Length: 130
Picture 1 (cartoon, rainbow, N blue to C red):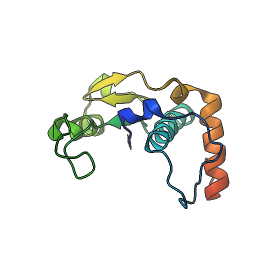
Picture 2: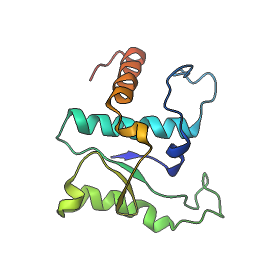
Picture 3: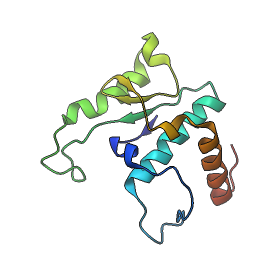
Picture 4: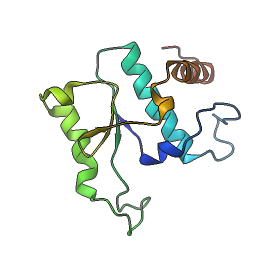
């Protein structure tokens, strides 16, 4: 299970110029697009175990701020449900979830070519090939 964000919709599906070493700040939206695409790539390549991305919502935390509109309790319930439920809907892989509802992610998330480019970039950076 990967923690995504609705911000991934504003992510740019390009790997050009990404500073994988973190010397310069990157885009939060891009990072969430990458992690959501990674979860979809793993679901495509490896049917077991299940791989999903979850958007907990904009919740009132130190990062989200006190004015965040989502319910903090709802933020973790989808993750818990996907991890423990025997319901058929929860036993699927490759989804992008928000409050126990599967949502349509950014179109790049389910693009095998983008997924493969991302996996290649990650393998080059980490030395680990999936």
